[in-house]
Image 1 (cartoon, one colour):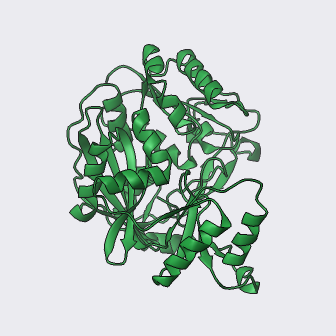
Image 2 (image 1 turned 90 degrees about the vertical axis):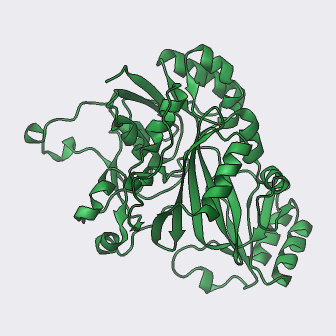
Image 3 (image 1 turned 180 degrees about the horizontal axis):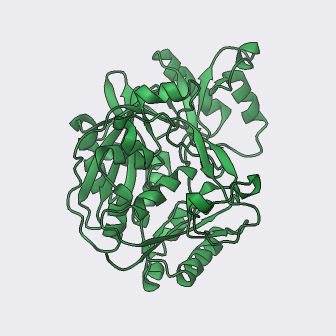
Length: 417
């Protein structure tokens, strides 16, 4: 057992409670203490940490960097996993290193390229990695040009912010007029073109959208782990086709992901997403942060968060090859504790079951969970209570084999990768 490692996760996705679990359950049994900060007092990230603090609101990017440096010095952070203001933080890597803190994030040049999807697509085309047709749109006129070109080629048009993470702001354009069809059932990502035009006419400033064809499944998210020497240590694809999830090592997805990670210096944990454009796999997005579903690789025998921390500490991991490809699974919802309102910012020790109070007041509040960005809600997927021997590894990973997930909840929410 080695010396203690102190890790900080700043404002991040609620799913990263599983990232924290995997750090603590590392194969070397190294003691890990986790510091977490967030803007939402009810984020389960705060409850899962050893120490936690609310982040100040309204800080500029420069002020946030100063705040981050202070947190690292005050809490003796060994490894910082930045999500909020990642690009500003990595630009000050040397200042964090002077405090003894390693940043688990790519170099600033790589973060800058992939922060803007248009810049990223241009860079990817230059090295021969296929991307779908795309238009950068800032006005109603530019939107109509893009939509009409895509529809003339037989495609549905969709758009998303040129800079952004996850599915925030993603919409599919339809020519159908707004009607009760759009009000029945659950909210849809489909939006009538006429409403989009109205919104653009009334906007106070130009939008910055990427318009492209709606790409088909399967979606394959390749989780990569790359050392600071630029050599890829791990590349495993997670497949998504409707509710069903699975794993792949097929070169169709893995080869371009490895080439991309090495060519652009995507150090540490990144996520590279592909979908189908007709019969051709094309790159959809590159995330310069750990994916929310990274913990699912536990079904393949891989603890990717801990391997990344080892690399950040200067320890060699060797090649991480799955011992097996886990069975297909589905993501379901479930509860995860949040902090009581009056709880100090230090995690209390869990009482033994035999002596734990049983009064209602002693039961920690929980958040009913599904996957969502940390800025929207404190929601995160967890394992279904229906457990079979094949499902046992999923307990630590928050996932369930597809065969048990359906029995657990017919209305289980599907979480994004």
